[in-house]
Image (cartoon, rainbow, N blue to C red):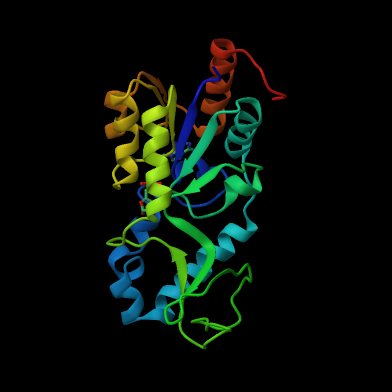
Length: 240
Ligand code: APR
């Protein structure tokens, strides 16, 4: 039976692409206040300010390239038929690196959704020609297609992620501080159902306590080691 390998990623895997994390020393929440920029209340209070911030992040991401860490996870998907990727990131870099089986728990920064008619599209324009952007169907105010604090995650994405965590033989946790729920619950579920938990993160996190293997390195280096470990343990069946 092919091994069920699941990876959960956070902002740390995009750090080497030049995308700021949220809670690191130069993290976004050190410079900006989440309650002013990443909540529904903040958005409806000041949609222009919130969109200026998202447009700034979209411009950063548009200039960024996937890094070796993203590429190794895409290679794992090609090599192991039962490999799945769950991400908290909204930057879309996993897909640009070639990952296809990606569950986006917190949405995608390139998605926009109308607050009036609910129409949802991908809009890759940087910078946005009009801030705040308007729905081309009804003229309503568009919002970023991401999950804000206080909002629930897309139910189907969360259900799929929890099932993958329960069924996993190996659960990789890469580049996340493990403090935002319900995403942070997934490694504990995997552990409880018997998975080998491997954490790749230069810093300790609450998840370090339950990790069977800790790789205290940056994602690109750490994932290279993990990839070799998995090939030794499970043999390289695929076209790696
Ligand atoms: N390689 C691996 N890990 C790294 C690297 C790197 N090069 N650089 C930093 N890290 C680690 C940090 O040590 C930290 O533990 O990545 C983690 C980033 O943590 P956060 O900034 O908290 O990002 P994340 O865990 O993804 O945040 C979760 O919080 O703000 C919300 O919705 C947002 O999805 C986000 C969620």
